[in-house]
Length: 90
Image (tube, rainbow, N blue to C red):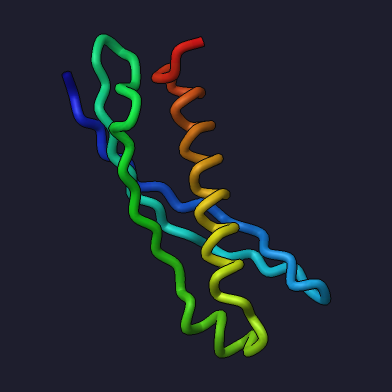
């Protein structure tokens, strides 16, 4: 059993209707691996991005919608990373 901690910076493209904003997000995630395979349910993550700056530049921004789309994007990027590294069962 091994715990792996990864730190990655991903870019999320958020559509505001009149403009698409590229948002850098820093994701730290850790997970357990046994015999080279991810242990289900062992992934934990923390996500950082500059919400105050986004709210200053885009006052009509919906923070709840932004948070939801960033969570989904981070989950997709993590799954892609795990698949590329061979930690997921085929």
